[in-house]
Structure formats: structure tokens, C-alpha cells
Image 1 (cartoon, rainbow, N blue to C red):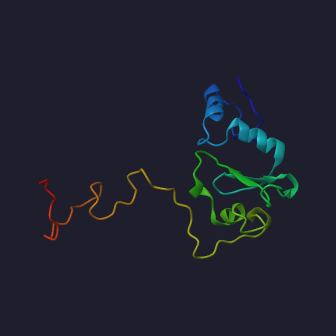
Image 2: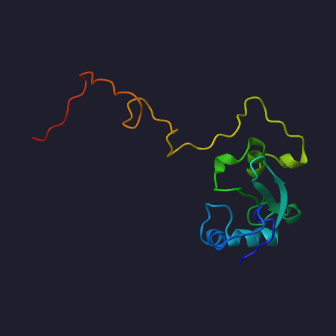
Image 3: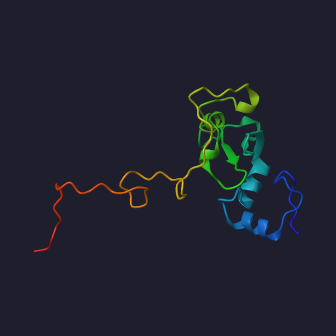
Length: 150
């Protein structure tokens, strides 16, 4: 049985299917390449309330090709970019030099809590008149003339 370090997941045992999932899919958390890169070059900065873990280059080193510090997140579960809270989003996108784990970050009143992206689910937005929407399409008003071939 494959047994990585306990920092990989919060469980004590990993099944073979977990190993294959990590080996071949990027949308279910980290891949083997990301795990190796994080182990070799990354330093843990903090964790948010959803269990996502945030990393930066060891020692805050500036990447010479980019001109700024590399930062990345390992999601707890499926990779869902909208699951990053506002404070961590600002830090990830170089809008803040100090991560929320190193300061007393308090969200502003206009910053809303996370809602998962509903696209492709029954909770998705369906505009009025949509064939998938609830309700009925409005009657045609007569300003439309159907095209017919000659």
C-alpha cells in the first residue's frame, strides 16, 4: 500500500485508488508533480477555513523569470478557484504582501462569504425565456417574421 507523509491528506491510510487519482488527475487536489514541487521548493504559509493550504517559494524568494514570488494553493478536495476566500485571493494575486495567516485579517462588510459555483447544477442561473428555466416563454409579439427559403 502506498503511504505518503501525513501532510498529504488528513487520513492515516491511502488506498490504491487515491494513489491513481493523484497520479493522473489534477482536478482532485494535487498531482505527484505538484507534491514533489511543493516538497522541494515550497513553504507552507497557512490554511483557510475550507482546508485549502497555501504555499510560497521557500524563504520568500523572488522568481527571476517572473519578477515576483511564486505562490500556489493545494485545494482540499476538487480544484475550485471560487473556494479561495477574499483575503487569500488578494495574497495569491500579489495584491497583498502579507498573507492572512500572518495578520489579523477581517473581511470587509462588502466581501461576501464563499458560495460554490453553481454552473451545471440545478441551482444554476437560468434567465427568463430560457428553455431550461422555470416558467413559460412570453408570447411572440408580432415583431418577428420567420425566414422561409425562396
